[in-house]
Image 1 (cartoon, rainbow, N blue to C red):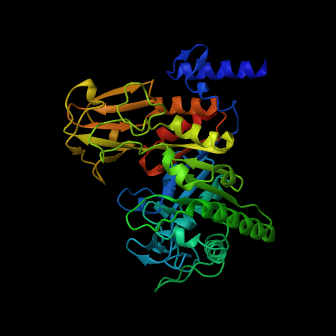
Image 2 (cartoon, rainbow, N blue to C red):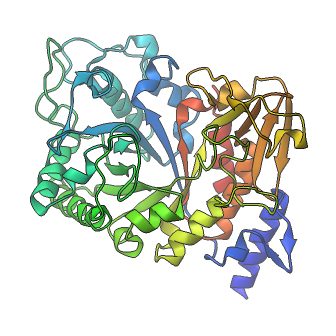
Image 3 (cartoon, rainbow, N blue to C red):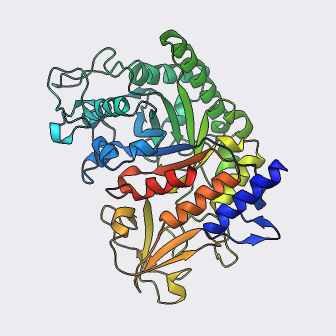
Length: 443
């Protein structure tokens, strides 16, 4: 009786969000994944480089109200060196110690209104995150390693027992023990300078066992070695945590494509070492393809012309069928859109040929949500896909808005999932409209 009541309640939530009920079951619960679970993780990525052109500072997590509505912030990214170690450097495309812990923020740009001084051991984003945690004691901050650009040597780092031990030890030493190097003429850093900033590690290897960024090292044994690397992280995190009287978390960002999951993820084994995993729920389609489509659709509707039929639901079902506990899955939500231009004015621009990527503020074919909401054009929502889009007669933008987020958070609840993840927080509005939608949907 209790299970039936929970499902009925979940169905009501989904109907309110715009999902149809078919034969007494919602589209979400039809996946048969699990019952409603709580509490939920609400993860958001803060990008190291967002403090530059976007002028998105750690302070903005406080002034926007986002910090109060998140459970975890993942700081993106730490790099993996050619020697298979975590490191800090000031070199374009390699490392940005300046942003991490050397830049001194003035009082007006600081989380607590107190400016940095030259004599303090820690400055930069790391110090601002430490201040933010003081204001929000329940907020956890994790150091995310890798990403699209910095996963080149993950395979080397994970290759042998010795390389895994050395890699993990270097990351623990730098980011958990906080032993940051003093670089150049900057006075910041030193033994224990960043202790207490980070509460855990997030592994963002893109992608084990399959192609990611050009030049990445890829091996067939990456699949097994990722599991072994997670085991080594869990061992060393527990060992160091016991020394300092705390527990450190371990999470991972995992691919959406079932083929990449099969090539690189030992699902059941890997999840045994993780607190939870965030799964890619976006970049399912983009202007790297000639035909417009939903970049982050919850379901693949019957009209979807793409042969792969990618969707968040397909990804979730693939992980759960492989042995992942539903309650350890957090679905990724984009705070940006993907756009095409030269789109013909038919079917409101959906599933139509294009001439290439639409113009974006920072990158062709990509635009932050805060920019998209100010664009002219007609806006559409498709409940069968769990997707929204903007079309001005020529430019087509696929993105998530609060209505889509309501549908996705209802899906999380109906299927007993662990929560959501946002990439990335600098794409939200000044008042945190998308983060508020996530928070409201998961409360």
